[in-house]
Length: 238
Image (cartoon, rainbow, N blue to C red; front, side, top):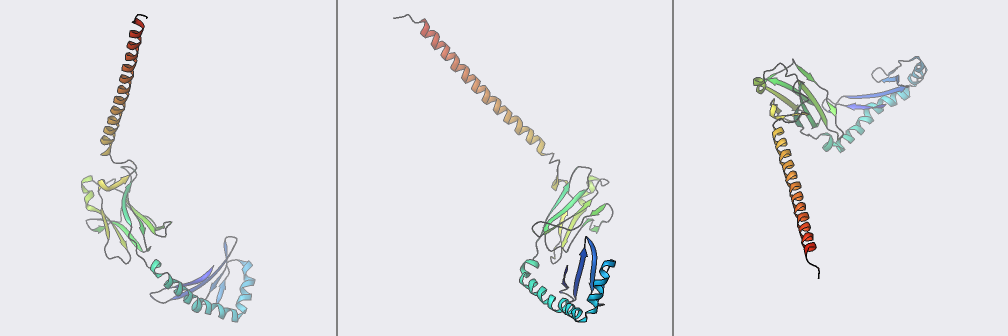
């Protein structure tokens, strides 16, 4: 594994060359001391051979500090519209059950230089808060969560709490109030239960009415056919 890192703000350049074998570090290049670090005894012989070749060391140092940054800056410029973009996330409040912490979840943001926290009356909270890591999404954007344990908070105080999301390069913070009405949960919205029951009862009533109509219609057809057959049988023969 080899390459270079370039800080576009300070202009600092760092080159690296890292060898591994069988899942462990084998030999690491240190450009500042112009030497190699060998965590295992098996790499010592290779270390000495590389360090004895001064011309090769000069070549490596020149490549990692001069040529590599030029390539890197070229690639950054070519992909600047993609790499330097800003994408605002969607932020939601999630809760598995009434006794679970409320998780403030942001997804779809870019870049990954972001912060998210809970506040009470405008002051950042540290107790009862669990900060998650920034994780990548499959589309190149990122997501993160910060959970707030609300089990000890009186319901009438919930409106004092806010989830704040800050994204680098964006002046305005994304703020969402701790409101039970906007919390998404696996248990669903209890207000929808009467509507669901009412709809089910109405559908059942329509189904029974339809079945009743078909039975009534069938019975009328059967009665009519029987009467017609009896009348024909009772007619005198010619």
